[in-house]
Amino acid sequence: MQDQMLDFQNLSTWDLIIMANKERKNWIGLRFELCSIINAKSGLCHEDCKFCAQSSRYKTQAPIYPLKSREEILKEAEIAEDIGAERFGIVTSGRGLSKKEIETLAEAIQQIKKRVKIKVCASLGILDRESLIILKESGLSRYHHNIETSPEFFPYVTSTHGFGERIETIKTAKEVGLEVCSGGIIGMGEKEHDRIRMALILKELDVESIPINILVPIAGTPFEEKNTLSVLDILRTVAIFRLILKDRTIKMAAGREWALKDFQGLAFLAGANGMLIGGYLTIKGRGVEEDHRMVEEIKRLWNG
Image (tube, rainbow, N blue to C red; front, side, top):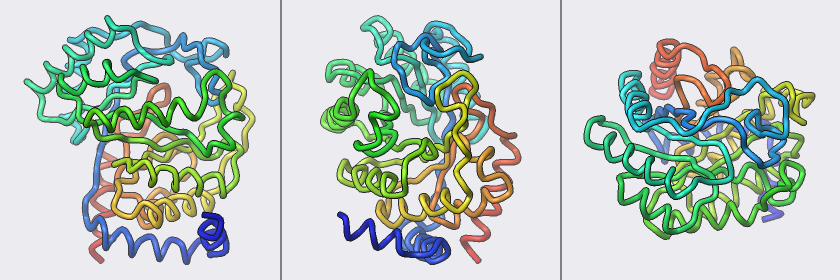
């Protein structure tokens, strides 16, 4: 593992991008995945993740409300289908959900599967086997649970739960037959070797989809003064993830507009083949039409 890390770190950014684009072409071709998410339960989280606006430990402007109704979630799924998303992710704040909340979401997923032509995913924190089975039987196709960073850097990000708990949730989700979406946040102060280590662990876990979030420093959180990660560091990360994860879906998620600005398209030449559209949990995204135009241009570049 150490030798592989050094191999990547010794390559220039452009060498990595060129290599990653070839791997994307060989393994992925023109496949591009669009996802949209709903913030189905917001705020009042008792965990202390230093990047998160929804922690009750920090004074932020994040909205606070309980789990949305089945009807509200169904409506959001219909909107996700309308804007061209292939997948609809239900996201809730907090360490996990109560049995009653799991039952409500299971009913909502059943309704979505009956009425909307979209794949349903969920990000609901640390769940036990019974809850994951209930969700799978309701029609959930993929469970999202980020590992966030390397195990070595994880204690600098949160102290109220351990890296191992996240790994265990991912393994349990796969054991009950769910696909898994798992990635992390870059730009929290970690080094490149932490990002490489994260990619290698995700490969070992055999996750199907990997979102790359770029830290947006939020006022009121402990990370509000973090420096923006450079465009080169972001592109290096995307390329390294593609080189390690081969045929997996690599998605640009929160922070892509803010951190990459005019260089967004380069992330997709560096190996990414998917993105979130329609906004994030507590941060607005850019216009859906603008994103769709970018996707068409990316595919033309891939074909060129």
